[in-house]
Image (cartoon, rainbow, N blue to C red; front, side, top):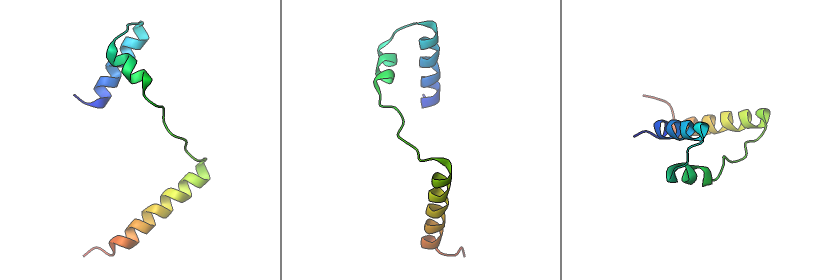
Length: 60
């Protein structure tokens, strides 16, 4: 079963007010981490992509 399918089922349970052990486990998981604001995030992503491309070298 895919993670998206499972979380969709759990979201439906939560919307209906149902309780299950899977739902309580999912709700106890740590939330997403902090993301930097947009200009800094974009600069970091583009820099990382260019660095990895330079390490890989030219395509043959």
